[in-house]
Length: 404
Ligand SMILES: [Ca+2]
Image (tube, rainbow, N blue to C red; front, side):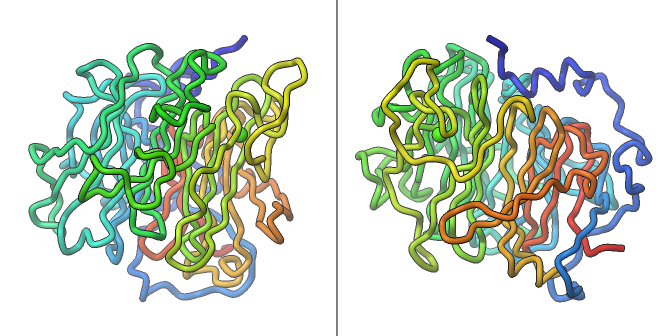
């Protein structure tokens, strides 16, 4: 049984601490033109649904996430070992926005894994990070930090307020890692099943543990179950294995979860929002560890449970899904109108799309060649205009742009 330690594979492949930052020519087969991010009002829309990519930055150290505050043209990249840096002139900003590397246990699938800015960050300077702690070792931590001046270049590393801490000391893998605000204004977190192989403690199906879950938190009252949570705790959805990346469609509020598979199947889970500003229904069971994708996880027959994914692919095609976003940007309004969802496989390096129609995924396309050179896609990201980015674990960040 092969280990599914995807980041560890990248480290073995030479993308670890000692690797030099890739040269521009190495980071994108389309060339390495550095394109700065642009204020939303300065973006000129281009007709048509065709698209290309451009490199917007290179030289980050094991980047695993990208995000931007609302109404703020800046881009922030999360580096796995514990720093968050702005993109400045196509390079990592020399002064970290946040450096908590002394508090982070990094390597393999562990580290500082994502950032989510408060919806009113420009007023209150509040933001949230997801990381695995050095002490106690491996603990999954969701913490708030503050930037005293939200428009300034650095946050206060001493302002940490821990919202949630989850023991994760048994195995190093399956930490989850995504934070995102939902359409209902609550903070969501994707937590892995605790690791090992096959979810040995069946955490995914237990609604009493926070492992193997999509959590939903009120950041102003994290110790109290958010109103509408179905199990009297932070759990919102269960039956997940390692939801490394999930997102909400910024137009519709629909939820897309890329759940990393075990032996045979990678999957995308989809839950529709019932209406603008409303979260997808509570209490969904995504099946793990009884189901893997559309199939029984065990090789013997099972009674299928839970909600099925809308898309899956086998380990003949890849082995570690990186969930992405529905493109809803300004630069390509015709593409945005189609509701096209982008995702990738970290291992094999493909990038693919589909769109939801009538509750089913349709129009599947392989767009890997558009993002040539992205290699191991550790994450996607959105800026404040809804433009889409691809984060390569080797240090580059690409942007989806109109064809050139
Ligand atoms: Ca599932």
